[in-house]
Image (tube, rainbow, N blue to C red):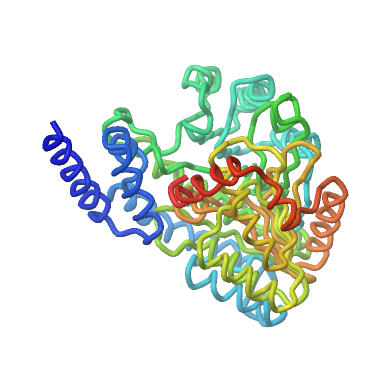
Length: 483
């Protein structure tokens, strides 16, 4: 019996190593999967089948095919027809630090600088959903929504009813949602929208999902584009909890942007690419004029920004690189808000270098978990970073879900990407990187207001934690690359 067990363990170890090394991945994720496969022989392989495999080649091609170049040509035509909307001279006028970030995104994400945008910062669910519903009611040509979570609760039905109403009025409506993030929301929920002539589909989900094993690649983006003129991007999803209606979380603190101007084109582009990669048999016409209406000769606002995406369709980890570059550029302050703090070695090094160089580095996380393993890993990394003089705040007034970064006086980021391995490598994410003093000041003021409802952690407070709690944190940290 002992010999049989030895054979089983040996074969399992060999298979674990061969399985993980079949596909290139970073060393941290490699070791995390090997540990899981070795210590959980059967369950580990089942989990790996669903969550450890790379994006299939056909899906990669769907994201990287001809649609992107066709959309880019369309956008350039529209931009050139609008005097002063964006140009190389505008890039040259930006501060040197901003220019370096713009250049990086132009190279690794083919992301143009979008100038002359009006940007409104929305930090409460009430404000966000009131403005969103108003925009939906005013739609005349098209509505495109993409959310990680679209729950079939009271708010979900309210938004759905608005979409049905607009579809019945002749507006073209498309909804893209993540099937795992929207757990409990079935295709039947969207039946009224389809009956009204609208469209709804899950992101990347195939008919035989158990065979194709794409569980690990989640659409975490939050994009809304109305008539090609008004766009929304940030952290809110569709559901009652985002209005603070769930007792478990209480008040929900998030940050979203409403954008008008040329940057809306970029949000539209990413929605169209995501839809066509997901709904192969019913693609949208990516060059239709209604999706990219002519820009007004009068600038919508004064904010310069770039819409940046990242995901498993690229190995560049564009948003993570943006975060690191922002940290590197900080001279006075780098203030971060994130619900999940599970950084990799490169981001940890960047944070520590900044803090030890005299930069005021602050990181705000929730005081409560929504995913236990992730929260314990967050606590672990918080306890380590505080040793370098980084100020760690636990937000106490409900659940903090905002994903923001404020650097010095006029650099900022708002979007869907958390400060963790999953957002860096596995999720499809979208962020707005902003180069505007006014918006940065608004975000900084919001951060300072949130500090009033937060508790500052110390090395001593982490030392007072029980041994059992510290063990759970360390154990969760070992699985951090695959959480």
